[in-house]
Length: 80
Image 1 (cartoon, rainbow, N blue to C red):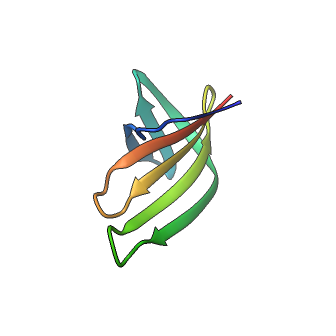
Image 2: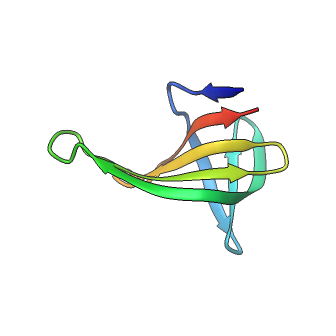
């Protein structure tokens, strides 16, 4: 089952020896990147420029992204 988060809450992401460490909702975990891609669209209106990462950790399988216009990280989807 997939849980799409409508608000895309902001999360904390750090890099530790080439690994991602994400923190959200009181949890902090090192995750491995399974897949990544870039989305750029709507450049003529309100541009969207994001780097997406599908990540897996001990407790999480998630889709996160870095908003390249603001530099902030967000959680978009959690997988069960």
